[in-house]
Length: 64
Image 1 (cartoon, helix red, strand yellow):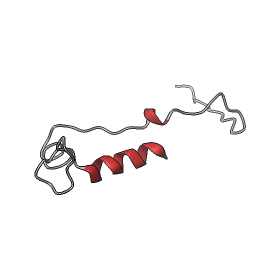
Image 2 (spheres, rainbow, N blue to C red):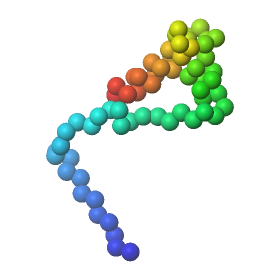
Image 3 (cartoon, rainbow, N blue to C red):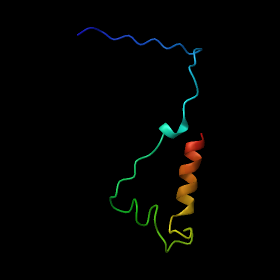
Image 4 (cartoon, one colour):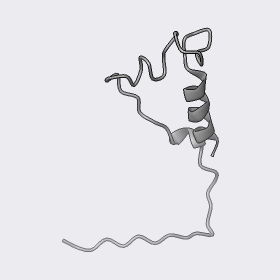
């Protein structure tokens, strides 16, 4: 097998990288959804039952 070479031109930019390509994966397993992101009984839940602390953490990550 031939070796592969990758060359990075760090001063060449085509355009900005859309932050929406960086995301997460939430699998409906265990407490990831219920009692994780969705928990209407939590003191941190909004009117839709979503935990605002979790949603804020996700949004901060997207803004980086």
